[in-house]
Length: 161
Image 1 (cartoon, rainbow, N blue to C red):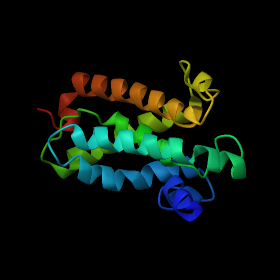
Image 2: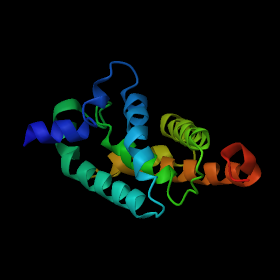
Image 3: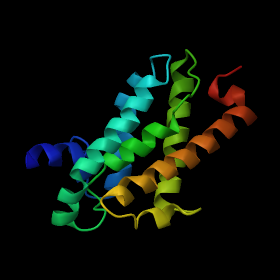
């Protein structure tokens, strides 16, 4: 059971990257997320956010007991937050527009996750493992709002015109 928790928590071992494991885990997650976004409904993204959050709650105490508070190798929380960025995003038919949107969302999410502005850092203190992923969900929400704003301001950059 602990092997399964480790596999899931490290994002299929993507969190074992020696430098910046959260960034590596988020970047690796763009590939399955890209395929989930091919479906023209919001349900795959909602299911990813909910399931990644549930897994994070299940494994949080295991990782904290072994690796300390909010360990870097635990990237399932990044997966939940990264998915939230793309909730309800319009998806055009061109591959380059999709890649631009994914990379922009990735950069925005990593910015909010790394620097933790606007109250994000306060969420890390929540008990029972909630703090591990709630800060990432708020970072994802802020990145979602910024990405939606960028798409509204420059729709042709994202292939919306």
